Amino acid sequence: MGIMKDNNNNVRSKDMELVDRLVTVNRVTKVTKGGRDFSFSAIVVVGNENGVVGHGLGKAKEVTIAIQKGIEDAKKSLISVPLINGTIPHAQYGKYSGARVYIKPAAHGTGVIAGGAMRAVLESLGVTDVLAKSLGSSNPHNVVKATLDALSQLRDARQIADIRGISVQRVFKG
Image (tube, rainbow, N blue to C red):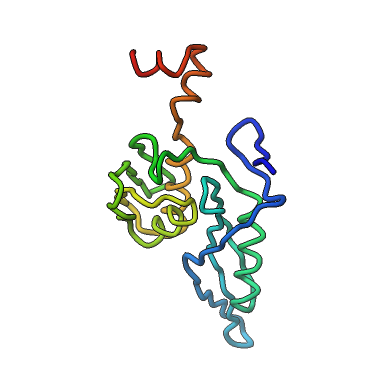
């Protein structure tokens, strides 16, 4: 059973054991002439804790249904990220709307040093050691998307060697 990928890091969730993490639940109120109408939106992150992660948004009249819809949505946006010994291959900035994030590899034993929305994404990905900073907006929707933007830009030495048409050893020699 291998990971099914298409041309730009996207992954299909078929035959994959995915763990879901709830990032945030938001109660929304619509005021009508008949009174207040409450509904919920839920941001969910799913991942296999081994290099695959995705996010989704679900909206419904009940929290549990909103979470289920978020999980189904998240399974449609999975991406594959290269990991090296529980950390990322290199430092990377990510941006989405007003949110900007910076993620940086860390030595073994450091742990996941990251804020709420970023922590959920990185733990679902399977990263055990990373330093991360959220800059700009703290809106969880945008922080999750900025984190995934940064992760989708990560490349390991094998990918660089394939792009340049050289061996992995030559990548490190310069």
